[in-house]
Length: 242
Ligand SMILES: Nc1ncnc2c1ncn2[C@@H]1O[C@H](COP(=O)(O)OP(=O)(O)OP(=O)(O)O)[C@@H](O)[C@H]1O
Ligand SMILES: [Mg+2]
Image 1 (cartoon, rainbow, N blue to C red):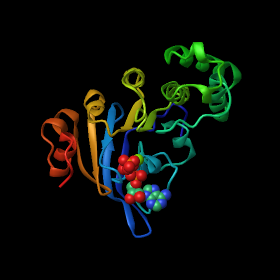
Image 2 (cartoon, rainbow, N blue to C red):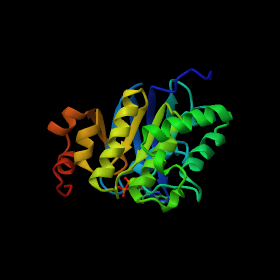
Image 3 (tube, protein in one colour):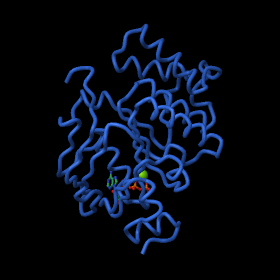
């Protein structure tokens, strides 16, 4: 794979994964185009985190196929991806060192590392925190560092698993702004959230998981106004599923 070749679109066909007797994913299929912001919705245990981990190469599926621009997954594909977890996983170092370390791990030269570090500290409003120990920051600030580190990798696709679950409205909006900006500059985004209002603000399309299956994959406008399944309707309205 050449350096310039993109890894999108993504085609997922018939993914299945079980942990013992417990099915986490069942016949999951969808296609994500080259651009956009997809929100993955579903109840606790629906399979959202497992799906993200499989797509990011952290977990192997039992069945099915994943094609990145027609190619199977592997290190060249994974190097073009980044992921942000619900709880930021930061090193016991400064904010700047956390970001530089991730860039060095990708094998980038010193000059390029410095260019990207400065750009991302600026765009994520972290310049004034750059030299502080990352783990001493507030939860919202730490999550901004985790996102900055992911964005510094300039991924083709960015996965986020409930990145704002424990943040206040202002910190949540700051993260959302950054996501919208990077989406506009061409980063493909796949976001798992429990916050339906956030999903309405951000989603261009919605993948709705229920019991490990994709019950719906629809443009956001259609999903939120006319969900096709009772489970999705209940989820959107904040009711208990049937
Ligand atoms: N490492 C694991 N070992 C065993 N079972 C697992 C493992 N990871 C996930 N599961 C199971 O797979 C199913 C899907 O889990 P997953 O974490 O993807 O749910 P989720 O949709 O992310 O839920 P939540 O909204 O609570 O985060 C659950 O039944 C879960 O218990
Ligand atoms: Mg989860």
